[in-house]
Length: 134
Length: 335
Image (cartoon, rainbow over all chains, first blue to last red; front, side, top):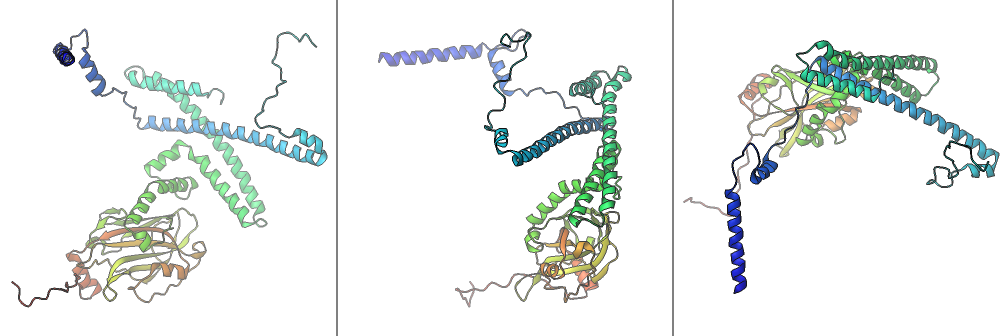
């Protein structure tokens, strides 16, 4: 009995609180945004985006030429790198073929043991002074 | 020359040009021009350098082709020719003049660049639409094989304008044979066979539809520089499309076949009649390869009667549904 009285009282209290909050929404003063206005703005206002520049005529041609030249430049760099890599691979391939014919032990030693180990552990970083051990 | 063309400098130049355009339109135009022209000039220099290198390579390839002309296999020759074509195209493709000409429509099909660009454009835009329409309107399974891949563009022009594949035309618009232009991409002239077929011609005896051939010409020589259709041996004269009254719309398909042996063989096609036509068996018999197709649709209107009276000189058939047979209820008196 008491519980129900308390819950109904609580409900009435929150209801009146909401009413007072709603009534207190003042139309936008230059100083502040009231909470409801803010919520409405966040939900419904369309985002202001910068207009995409639409080029025309001579500027468009220049833009397209520049784009093409940039892509061409990157393609040339890429192909240069790929060619040098291919030459390196061919040289290595030819050398390994010769080694296979020459010496079996050396050939096995030259083969890659593990594909996960790609850097030598013994490699030393450059230091400012020579080593104390010699 | 290439060293100052780093990514950052190009970005700065282009950003600067954009910012300048936005708020410096009333200030000196000299400032606006500077930043973008630097990048543009560098771009032009790179394009020219690349072109020079490719032309050098091209001259070497041409010498190689001349040297190996007799002694190498056709596969090797084909590979060398493909390489030569590729170099010729790529040398000119990046030039701003070529791009501008293509956009304006000043296309010279004798140059490999324009042929390449036309082909790329065809593959992208009109071909996909054509294939969509052909499949949607069931022209592909009915008249053409499902694995057909159009390599040339067949464009029909009526007095009113260009005919898109699948549009409805009026019978009076197609009384005269329309202007046909076949955009192809080979410099040498090849022989083509063209035909117009109606797959929806009614066949009363079999209570089904049959293919009816409206037009058949063969040995039409076409090339990239001469794409318009003229001449050739006419095997069946052009009869204008006449969709009969009572039938639904008819699809009039125009097919371009390339004659065997890369269009070099001259053919002598013999056809018994226009009715009960079979495109697939004819193509198989003479070893024709369907390389291009298009179609339009027509429905009956009063001008079809005129076509029947004047041009075909036959009585116009009117089709309708057969009378419904009352099987279970047989009334002698209707009330």
